[in-house]
Amino acid sequence: MQRNKILQATLSLNRILYWLGIILLTVFIGFMFHSIISPDAYKSLLITENERLRLIFDFCKECPRNEDNVFLSDVGTPMKVWMLVRYSVIMFLIILMLRKGVLIWKSVKERSTFCAKNSSYFRQIAIYAFILFLMVSFNFVDEGKHGIGLQIGIAMEWLAVSLTNLGMSEVFKEGLKLQKDVDAVI
Image (cartoon, rainbow, N blue to C red; front, side, top):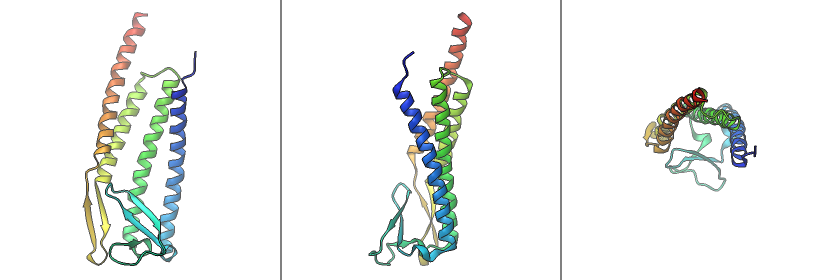
């Protein structure tokens, strides 16, 4: 039987992203712990969050210190801990989703596409994506002299991923029923 190159490429890409995610999570945790222990080590590291609530780090030696620019060394420890927990959980959930994706692609490669495990994996991905939807829809932000503020923004892409995977779970559940019917006839 001919090997499916697209399937193999997708499986390989999922594996690469999975391991890259683990490496990035490890580096991020180490970096944030170091910034908590040695806050002065990052005096020129500017941090911002874009409109999609994604954290952006930028080394900026020429940036003026004003209300618009927030440097990591100026952020308090409680806010750094919040950033560490929030982004670590987000990255961990994405890693879990990638792992389930690898398991699904492996089963498809092994010709056991419609099995109960795949339906369960899609349902688990849907749950992880829904938790991500909740996690990225709100954030606490350091507002300097004004204290801590709450930022709210609905992340529709994670809700769409959740609903799509929930639907795929049901499709695979129906596929399993049909496969059992075909196997019973043969």
